[in-house]
Length: 238
Image (cartoon, rainbow, N blue to C red; front, side):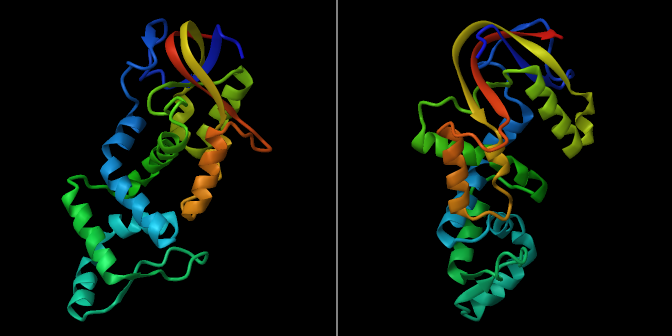
């Protein structure tokens, strides 16, 4: 890997060209900021997902859709129903029946955590999930919440940008620039395709396996390598 120059896809409105920046102390991106803000809710979702063996989507909706089933939950509690049926997600999972008391406790914890989440914010859980595995099993690896993301080659940056625009056309304003490194503190390379291995309908064990593969440095059959960089750098136009 070159120690002098990398490539990065940027939103030109959010990042400046020609200004030396410390990757660790730079302002958090909106995505990382939201991930950290929602952590109390994500902690509840992760614990419920792991213990109950449901899909991630079901675990998320158990909290996010609380207002829509709160009345039904109260009725179940009044009737002493042992099990409560959560919303049916898709054909990969039978209608999940969870002990009513567990749903009640989950609802209480959510209301008491002081942070609220809507369904549109569910996408921020991915960075959280990857960070959980890093902290637990790979604490010496660079945190994705505290680094600069870049690519080793212009070709990889172009591939990433093309896929990004296809997924969300609003990224058409993004552009590729050089990352001129002025001081390297630490940098590591991982295959970001592992994040694509986990979908919203995944079970907990599938997530652990994919995150493990990512942090251990394994590559998929069609890798897209990303560099996690810590140090000082300066963005330059190509």
